[in-house]
Length: 171
Image (tube, rainbow, N blue to C red; front, side):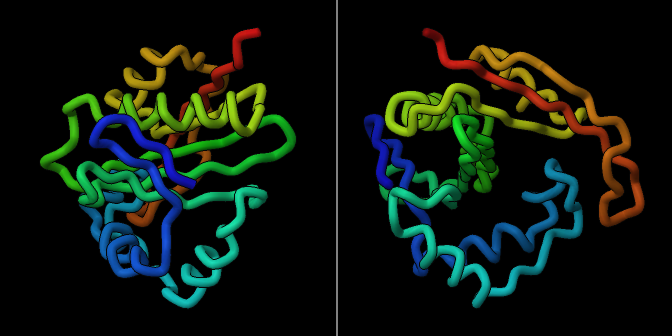
């Protein structure tokens, strides 16, 4: 998969991205907003298998790299179940956060899912303290549908609450 808007690109992750993804996921500063303040260790062989499996457009799960001018800035993903897509985004390079790129990347993937994958509903979630993500989702038209209080315990033993959002395709 490859989507482009000016200098911004969303593309399927490849084996060449494994070291970058593992480094991002191991970095607690990057992963803290997702509830992993100590980062996560990734099995490179399992990640390689996952990436190899997603090489067809028919695959129901895609791990994506977001780039600007061929420089990786972060990752996105989506999973399809029937006519519902669940998606996520993480801009991993701090110097490129809070500059409006995330909203553009999200809109690119939303358009793709509604128009090319023909989904009816897109779901996203975020931790309750991630006000920046909530603002972006709501500005794109997502509606808050559920709050999952104390739905899991993070690496430091802290109970975490998530907010679930949905966006429905306009008819």
